[in-house]
Length: 145
Ligand SMILES: [Zn+2]
Image (cartoon, rainbow, N blue to C red):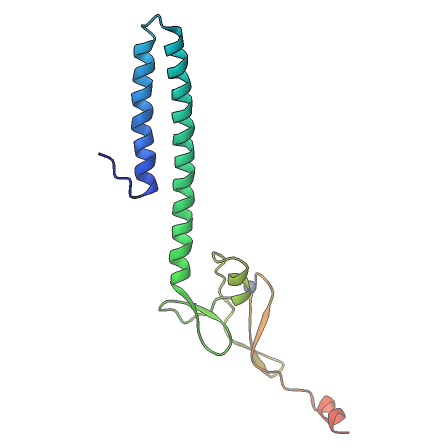
C-alpha cells in the first residue's frame, strides 16, 4: 500500500491507478460494449489529469518546503538590521530578503567611505552605514556660524 502522508505518495498512487485503468481499457477493447469503452476512456483521461495535478502539487510542495527550511535558518541579528544564516558571520541584505524570502544576497565586506563604515548590496544597490560619515570641516563650520 502506497503511503499517502506526502504529495509524492499521492503521485505514486495516481500512477498505479492510471496503469490499472489502462489495463481496463485494454480489456474493454475486446468487448463489443461501446458505452463501456467510452466510459473507461473518459475515466482514463480524468485519472491522467489527476496525476498531472498531483505532480504539480508535489513540485509546489517541495519548493515551499525548501523556502521554509531556508527561512528557518536565516535570522535577524544585531543593531544594523542585517540577517544572518545559522553559524555564519557574513550579513545578508535585509532589503533583498524582505522583497523575496529566497533572495539571499551577501553584503560587501565592511569598507571605509567618507570617514564612515559601510556595507553595500550589489543587487539592490542599498548602502548600509555602520558608522556615519565624518562631515567635512567646511560644512561643520557652516553649521556653527
Ligand atoms: Zn539588497
